Length: 426
Image (spheres, rainbow, N blue to C red):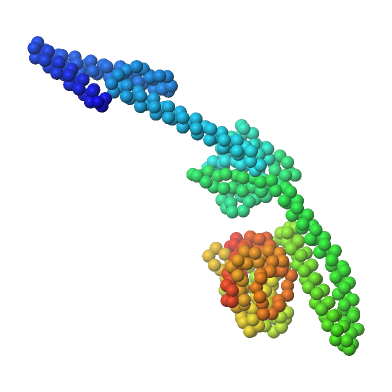
């Protein structure tokens, strides 16, 4: 029988007994009131005992009782017991998480909504010099590098920020922030000291080799020009050999020049001036006419805005010249190359559009890599160093701009340079 049914039957039997006795003695009302008072006192006693047991956390065995109160004690005790098991299981999971994160080679710091430190692993304490007592402190008060503070405030965490360790400046860290939850962020820092060292060695090697190659190339070119002047044309083999040697020497010279330019872009400090882009584009188009023959009918220049850009004219000239030169080289000689300078939403844009062979979708992400060439079979062989788009990418990065490539095989390509409005200087 259900416990509530037992309680109800007991109450009814007591009421029946009071009714019978009250009817026989004529004291029904006093006896009924006495019964109600007794029931009330019993419930108050049970409530008081239950409250005392709950106040101690329900850890001790519940008091011995009967009826509905025994059921209540039992259910609460079982809930507490299950909660204790879940808490113990959760505690084990938290301990395992802490042990695993403590073993991570990368630094990890959990930041709150106001940049305060919620938690940090062992690696973070070592490379950032954090202490256990720093919990609750704002991270900008402890890591005071200006580039890190700008990165933290920017809210744009797509790319990591590179900075030295606050406790050891020989350690280079790549710091990235990942947002999650309600206002929480995870700061991750990876030691990239060896990677940066290898990258610096590569840059130094390329720069040194390129620089050392200039002198022998100059000597070779000089002797080739002398020999070509002495060639009387009587030996076709000799004439062809000189021409091929001259072509390969010129190609090597262009390669060295491009490598040195890339090295300068990677290592040289930025210089900013107000560059008249419309005038620069007009000049570049005229130079292309002289370099590629009379191609004025092929270049369609449209200047929809007269905005100037804060940057370095020499670098921008190199980037724009490479884009226009590629468009002319990789498109039919009777096709039109469109150059357009205009304003679009929050950017100032340069479009260089051709009607050439196009680029496969799989090649587009890689065409800005050094020396990368797509495996497209071309009707005519096109020379080049394979560094033009790499130069374009580096120049745009130095001007806070980005390159977008839209292309389809057989239908041409459109290279778009997006400059932020903050770069406008007129």
